[in-house]
Length: 99
Image 1 (cartoon, helix red, strand yellow):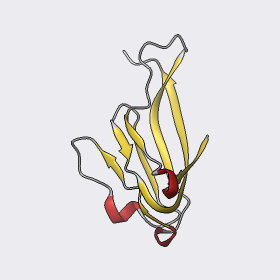
Image 2: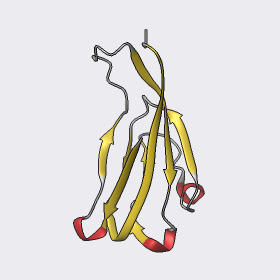
Image 3: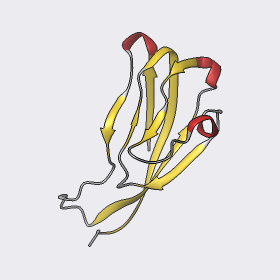
Image 4: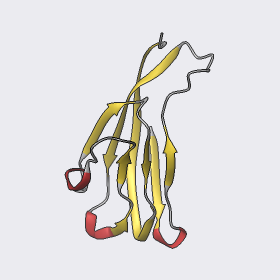
């Protein structure tokens, strides 16, 4: 699991990426990514979660306790937080190597 804080004073963000490492020597690959929203929307501004080229989760992922589960190969990012602190918890479900 990964606990992440995005601080407004540092314009905290996470650029475009995917959660799989196709060239890894590990015997398993990440199959699903799980992101839990730990902050109330009033605690920060900015910090939207986005998928590349897909419908955005928007307000449905804003409330504290919201969760996103998606294929780990989808590119995604978190836009800069401009005020306050956005906190999230991330985990991954692994399975056999991608073929």
